[in-house]
Amino acid sequence: VTNMEGLLLPSPDITTMEEINVVESSDENAEQSALEKKFKELSQKWKAETGGYSSVGSIVMHPAYLEIISHGEAMIPFILKDLQKKPSHWFIALKTLAKNYSPVKPEDAGNIKKMTEAWLAWGKANGKLS
Image 1 (tube, helix red, strand yellow):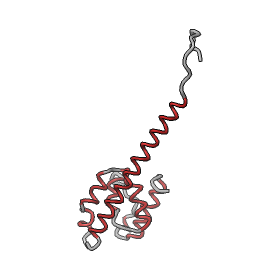
Image 2 (cartoon, rainbow, N blue to C red; image 1 turned 90 degrees about the vertical axis):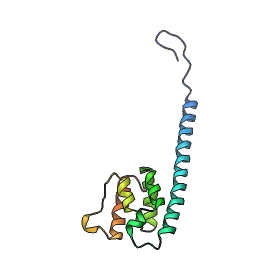
Image 3 (cartoon, one colour; image 1 turned 180 degrees about the vertical axis):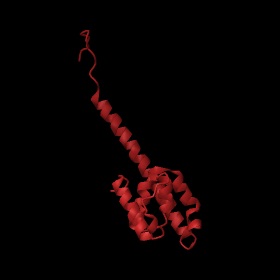
Image 4 (cartoon, rainbow, N blue to C red; image 1 turned 60 degrees about the vertical axis):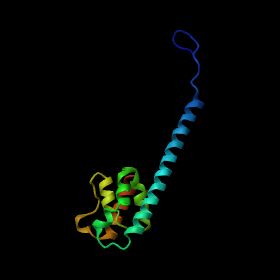
């Protein structure tokens, strides 16, 4: 490759760029895997320790639930996958992580089945759930 003055320039090292992309991709995958592992640990703890609670307020104020929320939007896909397996009280976490948005119709509030369906449809429409 030559420049405008006719000087020979080194060819761009495409292999190096590909390696950089692979490393970045590997880092993202490792981070995602670590986050998913953390989610699983926290959600199992939350479910085990709140299974007998009848107060939704107590369920959603559990430290493990709050820690899941503290990890931010990246937790949404994991919550939706969990919700897909079995409906649970993830709605406040989802609304918080979705920046106070809720796809649940006001008339469906309190109906776990319809709330779950609304959030799963939202997740699929927004690329958060495959």
